[in-house]
Amino acid sequence: MREVAVVAFAQTRHSATDEGRCDPELILPPLEEVREKTGLRTFGFTCSGSCDYLAGAPFSFVSALDALGAWPPISESHVEMDAAWALYEAWVRLQHGDVDSALVYGFGKSSPGDLREIMTLQLDPYYLAPLGLDQVSSAALQASAAGADRAELDEIVRRSRAAGRANPYALDLPDPQGDAYEVEPLRPYDIAPITDGAAAVVLAAGDLARELCENPAWITGIAHRIEPHYLGMRDLARSTSAAEAARAAGVDKGHVDVAELHAQFSHEELILRRALELPGNTAVNPSGGPLAANPVMATGLIRIGEAARRILDGAASRTLGHASSGPCLQHNLVTVMEA
Amino acid sequence: MTLEARHVLEFPGGYTRTTGPVIGRFLTELRDGRVVGVRTAAGRTLVPPLEYDPDTGDAVTGDFVEVGPVGTVESWSWVHTPRRSHPLDRPFAWALIRLDGADTSLVHAVDAGDVRAMRPGLRVRPRWRAERTGHITDIESFVPEVTKIVSPVRVEYVVKPGLALTRFLKGIGEGVFVGSRCGSCHKVYVPYRLSCPECGIAVTEEVELPDTGTVTTFAINNLPDPRAPEVPFVSAYILLDGSDVPMIALVGGVPAHEVRQGMRVRAVWIPREEWTPSMENIRWFAPTGEPDVEL
Ligand SMILES: [Zn+2]
Image 1 (cartoon, helix red, strand yellow):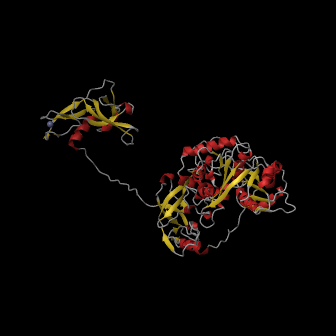
Image 2 (cartoon, rainbow over the protein chains, first blue to last red; image 1 turned 180 degrees about the vertical axis):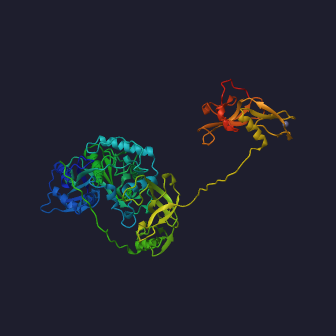
Image 3 (cartoon, chains in turn brown, purple; image 1 turned 45 degrees about the vertical axis):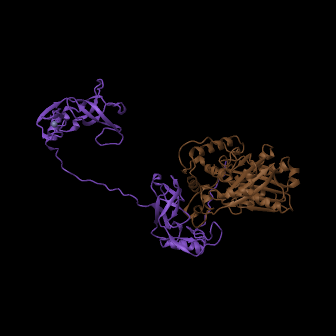
């Protein structure tokens, strides 16, 4: 296996409302930042993650390439998912051995549309989408199956939002309050906020990584696993795919200083903590996590970026970045990084 | 100035999708008002059917079996405010429903009326659309099985109080408690009665008793009663002065938790012009303020 590391990470100052930036305008600042941090203007491979349904336009990722300078033609790819999976593709591409650097970015604006309706479009078109089962309703089904304790959920939200207020890139959200339900048992504050934003990561292999930065965040394990899409075929109280991905990525082979989890609903953090068997002294989502800023399609990449940043900064020696896709934590990707 | 435009993404008429033999069979049966599952090689029954066994990825068998239509709710979420895309326009539950005979759960809506009607283990069955087309929404929603009914009962009678009670109520109509003294054991009973239950003999001596007495025991009632002023209310056994057996009456004019055994009480009468031959003449017994009595 080739040594590959995260050598740079940047993200937008995410916003809860549409600030009028189109996709290339959103991507440009974090791209410029990672170019500046690494000194690289061209990359062996470029891969992005986004979702056309967010913009309501086909091939919207193509116009986003305007931010890249794609002439003469570059080696480029795209995943119609969170950019964490674009990072996985780039990591696989670097394993081929013929290129040494990769640029990964993800972006999403969920403010222009109705995210709950839009996410219904990712469900199977025979059994679930025609029912109009929306994202929050299915998440509430999972929260109910998991039987999450209200006090524990409130504490997760309180901790995440406080961390988010201390993070200049996340949203400024108040402590949880009110006893109204969005979809019972979920309260409005159990749900990740509508967010617009983008993020970029640079991966580099071997000596190039050591040249580009002082403390590369070496990817020592990366794996993803998936479960059946149909909710009734799974035990919603558990995430077997997250557990299997964690095992395959070798999470248990050492301590974990920081874990950044892609939990878009408070109960998902409980399910993920259990599945990943995180040690008790691991700091979970010190960035605030998705409950403090959730730029859809960049959120998972940001988890890997935030986990990497602790190593780039020299603050941690072993961290975990997690990303999720599909309804009710259907698909999970776990990345372990070490100094 | 901010520029804005409305943008609608729509596929008029909708996508045409082929269903294949597995999903197609399920939807065809659904149109006929039946729910079927498909067997995996390992013998599990998948409902709704998938083309593959989620445990192994292998193709399922061609063996379809009818399941349900009754099922058991495994877990649910409750939609207080339905969205336009939702199947019902009133609050409802999304539920994972294990149909009888199935090894997996179906996701559908449950029209239960109230969140308090939902519980794990709730038995539900489909409410079918009259016009079915072979679509998951041919089941409009699931509804709870009938497990109880409410049967109102009402019969009317004409009752007379009997000779002794008539004599007693006539006394109440005049503001007097009428009792009777047994000629054999000398016990005084109130309300007035025509025989002594201890001696089994007729009683003829009338006595007039005062409207004061002592609480011997009492109960604080937290269920509403049409004869009581409010909840909680206190019903008590009151031993009228000069009698040997207590009679039951309401105690009022005092917080319920302050009522005690041995408390001295007096009847509170409604205004004299409203008196009839009825216990309604006495609103309740209220404390007199005298020292408690040792019982
Ligand atoms: Zn007698």
